[in-house]
Amino acid sequence: MKKDFVIRGQTASGETEILEFGGYKDGYAYKMTDFQIYPSTGIGSNNDELAGSVTAGKTALDPTAPNFNDEGLIATALFKLSHLVSNPTGGISLVNDTFLITQNLILMVQNTDSGTAVNWQCRFESVKMTDSQAATTNFKQFSIFDE
Picture 1 (cartoon, helix red, strand yellow):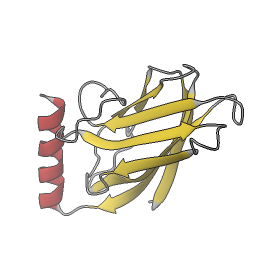
Picture 2 (cartoon, helix red, strand yellow):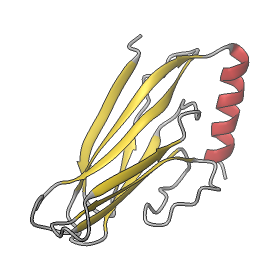
Picture 3 (cartoon, helix red, strand yellow):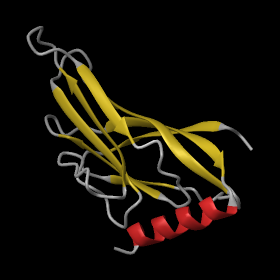
């Protein structure tokens, strides 16, 4: 089995994407190791504030108001693009790389300034689980998804 892989795309601001893990193989899970967002247009001329979130829950989480108490929140990212020297460009992302994934995820992005689409990239790593880890992981995700 391939050890790590990338899923990436471009999503309209305020919209969601389903990250499909339909190729789930018994005894294996995945963990997200990186989540990045980047503007899709006007680089160098626009001021943009981008936000993104990835969840294992039943519905998307608002990326502009992440709740770190939500058990399903796997990743959140913020990227600010500015052509002004006084407001530097930069980004940060936080990933719960201990969350073992065995089901589809929901990604949501938001461009709070220009409303243009947002580029995103997620990196995952496959993890071999013991039988007890598999049972615990599946129960945890069922509990989160069923809330």
